[in-house]
Length: 155
Length: 87
Image 1 (cartoon, rainbow over the protein chains, first blue to last red):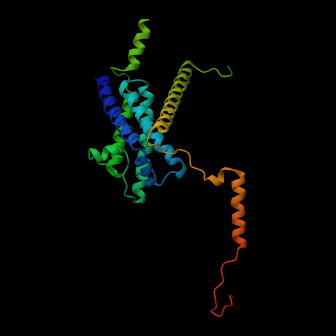
Image 2 (cartoon, rainbow over the protein chains, first blue to last red):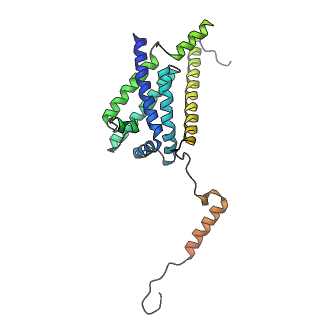
Image 3 (cartoon, rainbow over the protein chains, first blue to last red):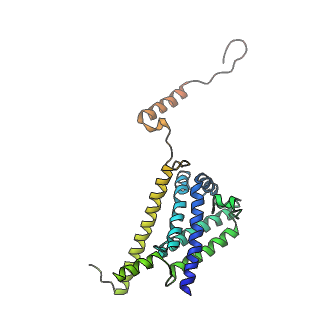
């Protein structure tokens, strides 16, 4: 049961971050402007973050879905979610009304809620909890890591 | 070995080292992919801040400082009093 739940969570969380990463990669300028609106980072590193973070999300999401280094990826994704949550909380405290930039271009296409508000904080906390579950679950099913381990044992 | 760790501590250290290795692997893989994609993509972003042409060389810096120096030497235009004499 726990293993099946871990697989379901892997597909959900991995899929969400895979798609969110792809949406941001397709429009890096928009993500760069969103990061600038947060007014938290030095101007010189914003272009680098706008290029790097979507790829990190994409790789982590992909690894979680296929089940390769999925525990480490889930821990890293949880850490990223905590940082995103802190950033959104800081925006709320400062009274700024901006997009959180979580889903990039996809938010406009699918009309997803993308504001940096308490809903985004709650959503991120749920994602963080799921990531910790994936990382700490004793076992999972249908993973590339498991397949490779079995293959090595047979040899 | 200077330290004799118990088996459980050794296991923890091994696991932590593996975790750190995997984290580094993922970070570096993402970095490489992002930079390569950004270099090849038509809507790429300039990751490094662009230097102005004058700041690139020492000669440019020198020329810039000369311009500033000259700027301070030139007196601002004085107001015309109307009778041809500038005060």
